[in-house]
Amino acid sequence: MTGRALIDSNILVYAFDPADRRKQEVALTLLDGLAAAQRGALSTQILGEFFRVTTEKLTRRLSRAEAQRNVILFAAGWPVMPITSHVVLEAVRGAVAHAMPYWDAQLWATARLNQLEILLSEDFQDGRVTDGVRFVNPFAPAFDLAGLLA
View 1 (cartoon, rainbow, N blue to C red):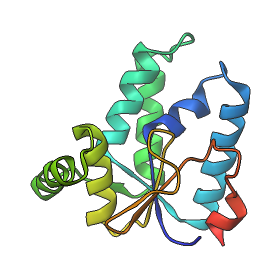
View 2 (view 1 turned 90 degrees about the horizontal axis):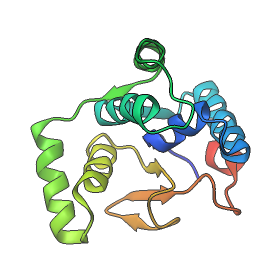
View 3 (view 1 turned 120 degrees about the horizontal axis):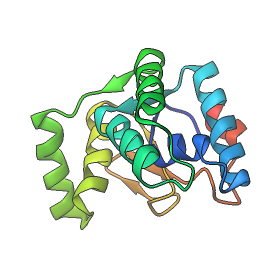
């Protein structure tokens, strides 16, 4: 499996959440591999979700200043795809045509319109392909990081 990947916020959050050590380890290994291969990307939506979840939802929350520092580092170290009116319109089309919840459709639309072939997230059906975007769950038992980066 080759191609560039949009990294969902849940992967970023798990990298900072010690509540599930296995998922934290998978997230850190995945982020390191994608960074080294220069194959990952984020979106403005994902950065915002990371900030909100890590400061409001985790048992061991990050301070707002700590979350802010990490958002700045992510934005400096990864390509960040903007949420434009075209992304919103494509997300609405995807929500209607593919019966996706809107926020999931916005992730899909961001990947699709930016020619990111893979959407890495635990929130979609693993292996599903919708209009050229493959959903890959990096926490699934069959996940193969080496194959993703090949």
